[in-house]
Length: 156
Image (cartoon, rainbow, N blue to C red; front, side, top):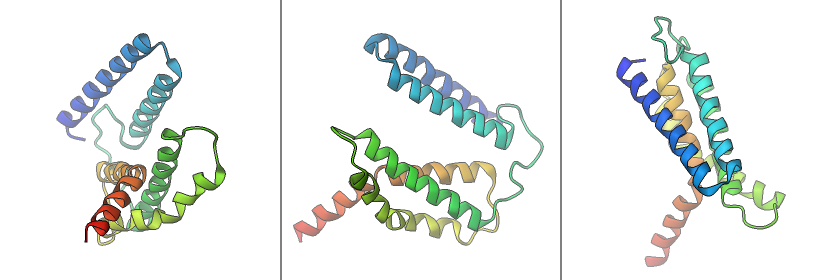
């Protein structure tokens, strides 16, 4: 990984942890802050295991991931994003039916990403991590995307 990217990632991760600490002090609510801190640490640990982050590495992290493996990982990240959306916006009692219903549309949300990866012969670690995060983001914001499509449809 380029040294500038490594430095920026470390800087912004540190700033995020400081902001989480400030939020915990101000709101006196540690549960959500703890979850976010654990997820950030898990991401950094995963990055360390896959690429040797933050130390510069001369090895190739994945040796080039096949497009099929990348598509599978991105699909899982899309599903995790959809699940995270449900849990994040949960108000009231948990419902398995409402939790599982959005997973049916996961292939529709995931489809635009497949075209980006399909023709590649191998992905570097940073590319794969970026695609995985993008897939999670697409899953998390699935409702907003479909909401915009519905609004445009009503205008016609």
